[in-house]
Image 1 (cartoon, rainbow, N blue to C red):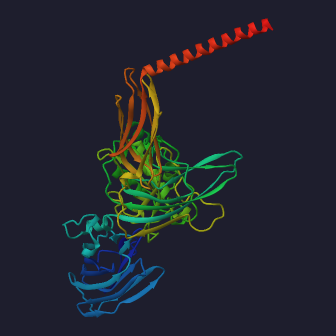
Image 2: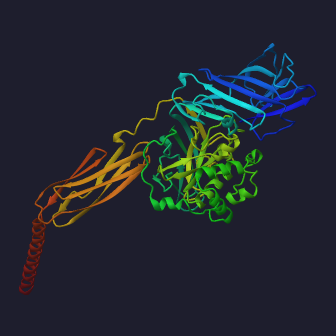
Image 3: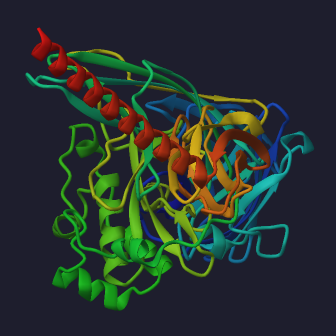
Length: 613
């Protein structure tokens, strides 16, 4: 949000207007007759009501002019308890509220004429939209100002109650440690959040149909774990056939469908979000990371225009700033089920962009510049769709990019769309607690589709319901959530090999970040250790095992010991010595000879009997 100034003058009389709204600056009349200095205080009550106090001083630059009125237009009707005064006493404000705006006009008590003369006054009001509690997090958003030469000084202070908890982030940091100055406010507003973890409950619906005459299967994407969000699948109905994690990190849930089957899948999901990466991420596979540099539909990283931009804007911050300042959000197009254009087409009509174009252009330039980048699609909470709009019509979803920070070895989400629509709020250094990832698109620029894209034809209502809650953190995955099953012969023979499998199943609705598996066979010399990362809910991992049994092994009991994250599972089997095999072979040969001898003897006897008969 940006504050803009506009002045109106007549001989010996000046009307001063301060217009606060979202959009581009509009200078309506001459400037230079007055210099304005501001000391603006934002004091937040424990209830979230924000008391705004503006201490303003106007300095005449001419001898024959004086300010008569001050006007402020605030882009909210949630303004109350307005009071004002100047050196002449109390000022009765004229207040008009309509069309989502509040206009306040102050007529000064004194007419102070003369160059260098000062008109000082105070305006105080309660603003109910500056501070909001969303789930577990308190959010404060303070508007910026226009870079107006008539604003000589502008200082802002912010006070919040200790009950808000720890400061998660403040952007930008106050210039002197306590106050923001004019230059900072002219570059955009102030954004702050209090609290460390955000919690939400999701109810998701997916409609699947198999119109074929043969069996088929369908995979849907459930919201996955990311470095900044932890997912728990509280319930899913019906139970899926299987779950797998793709190269982007999506959780793909498979359902087998018989011919003509229609299926509605319901999932209840809990989300815990943080601004800092939850864990130290494993090293990205170089080959996979390089695939995030490829040109794909909508991300034309090999296009000449994109390559030229990538040669100029070589860092993620430079690309972000370019996209934010080049494209303009088209609110009308956002309501018309917009067709995705891609990065190159976005440059042809930059003023007709929605979140898809902001995202596609960033990704295309980043990939062309050698910076791995991909798209996140999901839910972004907003209480002001003009400030923080959502562009994907299906259940009001949103798209934003992320890039891979090679120094930190982590994916970093950003939102150039909201950076544009908020006139400079910093969505690069820190995102916020309002973005929930439903699907990650990197290997493909379009798939997998997120929840909200599986709507039943003709169905009314929402397929995505999100409720932010004030709750405790999601408990860690219990140690017994991994179930081990062993398939192995009950008897093995010395001198031979035995084959089997060890299956590890995550029975919980929470992903297991790491599982160390140790498989040992005794008294045999067999030991295998491996580590599995990011095992999604309800996923099975099968490890094949091949155990060689030395020929010298004597008859004994054997044991397979499988230890997963410290939990032991045993499987016992019999070991037959090699001579047992020989005994069995001799027995088989002896039995065969006996049967053959018996048969020959009886044949001879039968022949003798026939002769005598």
